[in-house]
Amino acid sequence: MLNRLGKYDLLKVLGQGASSTVYLACDPFAQREVAIKVATPEILSDPERGKLYSRLFLNEASLVGKLNHPHIVQIYDAVVAENACYIVMEYVPGGTLEAFAQVGHLLPLERVVEIIFKCTRALDFAFRLGITHRDIKPANILLAGEFDVKISDFGTAIAHGVDCTQVSGVGSPAYMSPQQVQERPLDHRTDIYSLGVVMFQLLTGQLPFQASSNYNMVYQIINTQPVKPSFLRSDIPAVLDDIVARAMAKELEERYPDWEQFGADLAMAVRLPHLKVQKGDFADAEKFAMLRSLAFFSIFSDVELWESLRFAQWSHVAPGTVIMRDGEPGDFFCFVASGELKITKNGKMLNVLTVGDCFGEMAVINRQGQTRGADVTALTAADIITINGEALNAASESCRMHFYQGFLDVLAGRLAVANQRLAAF
Image (cartoon, rainbow, N blue to C red):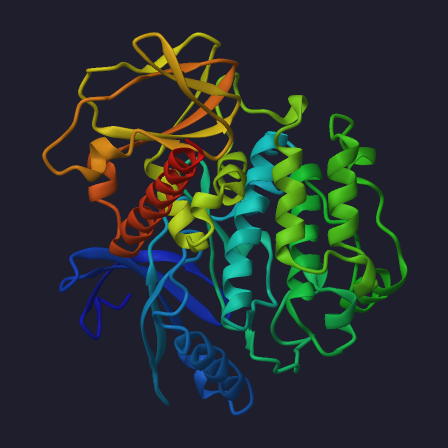
């Protein structure tokens, strides 16, 4: 085994295939562990396959620094030369989804929905950069911790309308769309199909099409309708059958037209009683959908929304719960995600807060600190999103800037209402 590659110290082999070996390595300058995918020397020396795999490595190397998303494996560095090709990536220790795509090792339904939802957001991010992955499969989706995933291996990706494809040599026919196996022009909808296949497999432990050869697989992908996932697993609700069917529709006009609609259906599904996480908890898909629906967060990018989701706290409150008390100090602010709250001062009603309203932000805006100026109490059962001032200060600069821009909009709105009330006297 190699001990060193460029500036990187190689620690151990993580995996090995016909075309490459993946090492766990140490980056002594950044002081972090990384994964390095190194092209097999025999592949590079092959007259035909060497050119193909050099091109794939070059393709992935072109994405260095571009795919900065919490659910995409970051590419830090790359070397593509005649005698050496390697990609330096973020190390994700959790392994791939392959282990959970087989009978006897299936994940709970709600977790499958969460995983696929996060994949839709990551692939939508790539799509907005003009990138289509083309090789979505469980082996290219890595587990990051207990609940997060990261998509890897963009070597076969196409960018900005390039429509060539490879059916043999690279790619995985079992996950290819009818358009891809027929070598037709491709866009993001081929990835939507492939992710539908992954969802089918994670739900059932089986591929939608079983074949003894690539030729037979291709025939089935083009001509045969798969069974519903619920035929193979009885506890799968009809809504998930419908989502898989639309994602895997053979005709483009019947498939999800974009990642937004695919993700929206998943976010709705995860709110159903039989797919809910433990009582009192919120699924990440539900949190993301909540934030995206609030006007305050309309200027936030998906990446900033995921960042906000991570440091926010989510809670259900019963009617009569006091969330803020007049005269008490506070270092947090809140949003109403559902329900109604009342603002009172000395027992007098001042205002009613409804979905999307922000409150308590003055204690964070005021650098000298501030006590609460009124009581805030739940009128109905409500969902509250709470953000601590210290957590906001630790957020990325762009995320923090958008929060303060949102605060200005809130204050401007309140000033406009106050002026209208004064004008009415």
